[in-house]
Structure formats: structure tokens, C-alpha cells
Image (tube, helix red, strand yellow):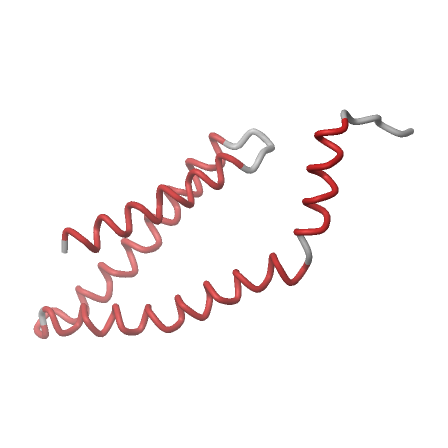
Amino acid sequence: MTVDLPWPLRVRTCLLEQLLTVLTVVAPMVLLSVGMGLMSPNAVTGLMNAAPRAIGSASSLYGFAQMSFGALVTLIVAVWHDDSAPPVAIELVTAAAAGQLALHKA
């Protein structure tokens, strides 16, 4: 069974097939993971230096905030997801903007 797509959609599909390779998908994720691995310990160290007498509380609050925000975003995507990528992309951009806003306010 073959589905005949209109030519603009065929062109887009061919372009996506050429652009989306294992390397173009995995390489940005590796870069993100390395960046997070380098940034997270420095963020925790900065948290510890803010209030040396409350090191345990600061570490717990950091972990709680990180996991809570991740759970909230996951819940929003799960409810809003309609078998397409735009809801996920919008959530990623919104989460990045919220992080930048929080960093700018701090």
C-alpha cells in the first residue's frame, strides 16, 4: 500500500530524511549532557557557598526543585501531547526561557 503525498510534502519528507541522521540527533544530545554535567556541580557548589550553615538544606532544595520542575514539565507534555512534536518543542523552549529568567532575576 503506497500513499501518494502532494509534492511539497514529499520534498519536505525527503529533506527531513536527509537531515535527520543518527549523528544530527545524537550529537546535540551529547553536547547537552556534557554541558549539564559541567554545569550542575558548579551550581551545587554555588548553592553551598550561599549559606554554609545550611548546606544540607540547600542541596535538598536544589534536588527538590530540579525534580519537581522535571515532573511538572513531564505532566504538562503528557496531558498536552497529541502525537506530534510541537507540544514537546514548546515545553522545551518554555523551560529554557524560565531557566534564563530565573538566572537573570537571581
